[in-house]
Image 1 (cartoon, rainbow over the protein chains, first blue to last red):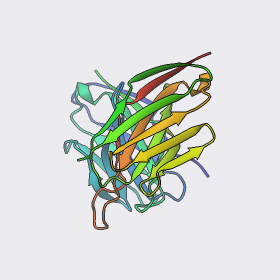
Image 2 (image 1 turned 135 degrees about the horizontal axis):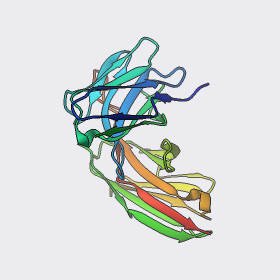
Image 3 (image 1 turned 90 degrees about the vertical axis):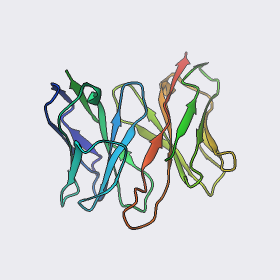
Image 4 (image 1 turned 60 degrees about the horizontal axis):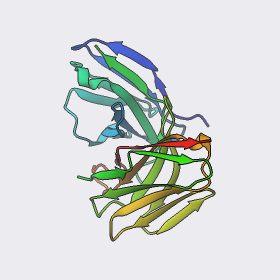
Length: 113
Length: 118
């Protein structure tokens, strides 16, 4: 059984650009959540995907969007990057909506210059 | 929405001592409380969790207690070791109803930097 993986590991972008981050959920997990972790802070919920549909959203603007594919992998897209978007982006997967335990990937470190 | 406060922000102990980290939450509907350990540059790792129908849970040197009335929960680490040094996060989650609500969303505390001195 493989764990949650994310790519790329690190990314540097400039303000105004767009970025796509990728997440492969743990085998058998159909629910993926994305979190943003600013330096020195706890992770903040961005949104959650279940069976290819957005199932819930945190307090993030519409320029943060996502996708989930039939194999339950997921993408996080951020448009019009701002300096404050610099953070560690984590995805977490779990077997279904009714389960509580979430397993995190290693994250993508995004730096916006 | 849910708000989780975590204290202290830093904690320094000697090897072999106990460490206690406390969290309070605001939403009485929260019913799942995990604790994550995050080492520098690594993913958050679940170390223990507790559900609202239980008051205490223990796993070797780690224990968590929950007081639903006061809306607070605590992590207890006994016989600390240098490898326990990391950032610890508490979180709270509310299981919503079927039909699109965001259940399973974790609201995290601000984190506690634990340093265990040999």
